[in-house]
Image (cartoon, rainbow, N blue to C red; front, side, top):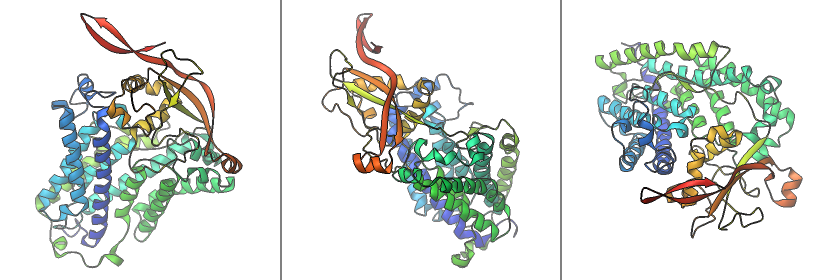
Length: 486
């Protein structure tokens, strides 16, 4: 079965597996550290409430069978520990079957989290991690050469990520065709990074070059992933370079790092890899070969959905076509906002809220708030609340399910919720009232930065949420709490 494996590509597999395990580690850490406030038993969108209305077939998950915060935390920390072990090379230190089981457990644990994560886990990079993680199960370990079929499937995923994103841009916002989208993107992207201000102030001709280079990288280069070497390596390196540019210019969780990881198997590492391990040159077990062939056939059959979506004039971004997230469609920034609005959340200890009263602003970790605070770098770590706050500013409809519970927990002084934000202006006791107001933000100019030290300029647009308090109401001989707008 010389056609089945490519022993000379052992280093490419090793680099891919270690990098993917690193991405898994970040994902599980984010889940473990944020879930209580977001989807825990007392979270804004509790898992127990969600699974009552969603059947197992529609969203397979361990937490459909049993849920407690302790059990969820155990699963998330188990996933983090297993990811760290695989990143350190544990998969090559055990038999082939055991290594496959380790990758399968990672995939099943993260699938369980995503399928109950609701709005908080609705991003394309969740499905992308699951799709890549599923293929990693069948990539083997040091006991066998890398399966050629799986290596090609990884290129197929990388192709769909880039080509799908390129198509959605050309079909979507006209500014991509006019090469003007980057006049706005660095300023209006969901979560700017520490260099975004500088990227925004690059000369407009360079922004146009960025746009054109993006089209080439997403619409031409991905096709070359399927070309013979060294062309495929050059194409993969071009994708890596583009993704690193995006890493520098913003915070997109682990999307860029995972795309880089998917491009790596297309790179020919043989000039630096040295001879493959002796075991990698041995014929693979028959059961392994049969399994890989079956999975390849399955992926090809399921690929009809994303292919149909890509050729459709009504192409959609970031959609899963099966509950296991095996083969998905991807895309980003089909439209680019021209202005940036931000929801600013404030509280007051005053018993009667007044416009000129003592209102203190909550500071978020990643999203813009204080105009004098330069954006921070958090990616590949994913600040889920901060990302959803960007959507909340686009339209209250995006925040309908969770913004009210978020405000209620601020009024309660909920510790888990307060851990998600950078600055709690009420360390002693929670506020009496909380309000939210919508501001228009823009990057300052070079002159404004020198004169004021502010990275942002903001101006009030309107009220987003009127002053709201907790009210104790009596019912059936007991008391409960509810949010009440004044």
